[in-house]
Image (tube, rainbow, N blue to C red; front, top):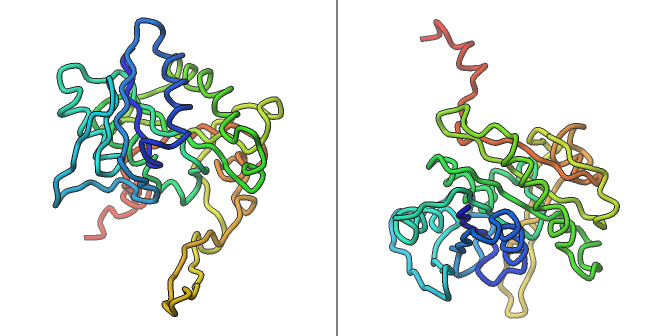
Length: 260
């Protein structure tokens, strides 16, 4: 198996090493692992592409490249330049430092990389490690992803649906913020919705008197409904959510018959 890895935390991010370890397990001794990741952190860029500017490409090692662009840019660079003659069988995006659940999914560069691969008909999985305050106290904050990542991805590759839609399906995995032995199990979930606003801004004044705004979460995962990624990941489950790039509100579209 030939596997491409990208992320939004950047080429030096520790979660990328975890994804590479998972990829080696999945690919086997005869597989190929390619890494094409952003040269700098790209968190929160969603499915952004560098449409109006070029991207610098640098090879850092064998099958290892940095791109001055977004995760979606990295996938495009891999598919149409770096791996143009030998496209990947699977794209892994992550492992992100922090969960990508509920509304976060819409902002996430990790999701954006996986989505771009799915739009090209390639199986893709986004992986994120829930990273609350407790995560700073753990010797290895990515341990749950490291221990459970291979089995979760392998199960998807063996039995999940991938191409039931024009845009294709990709999967969003979130690993809980706990010890590997305390994971409650793996659950298929919907994309959640947290009550109230997703983000708020907090103002800070710098020493030189200038004002700056920081984005901060304004709602907790416990406010999401049971069966959603946000709620179940916060309660110790590995959550797996099938996603598609098609944003059409199908029910509303059907209700619009005769409107115009």
